[in-house]
Length: 183
Image 1: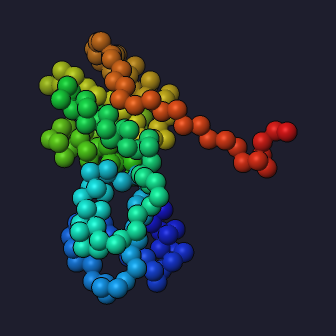
Image 2: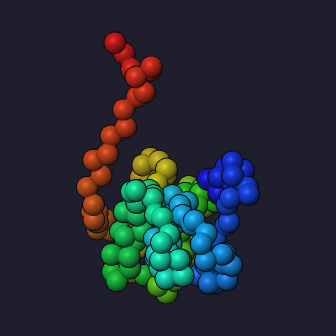
Image 3: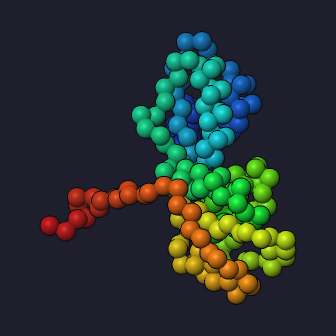
């Protein structure tokens, strides 16, 4: 997303990756300023950056709607909800998946051990040492089948009492474009 946006408007785009970047931004007082965010960022970190931008540029324009993906937000929220109950968080997702990496970061920032796995085959049994409760989640595009395989692998290693934590009802449906829909 960032590469695409900066490629489309390189002379009008400034990449802000931290509160320090927002604080250091040097623009004329009359500059027209707007922000958008990558859809898979950490909700908390993005909020801090937006707060700094709004403080520095009170007339900054925001997106009409929240532009962090609902699935990304919901998963980060779920991780925060389960952190008080678990000793370890395992995240199914690709190493190059921004939202999967954010889930690991959210847990680690709260002091929890957390690891990113592409599949159950990546599970290191040493990670389970001392863990009485293990949380499992997946990035927004992580296939349910991979989650099920990881749960089975944990059961094979002695896990009992799998519980599902539901923090949001995702009822979003995407329609096919008219050109592709059946008559």
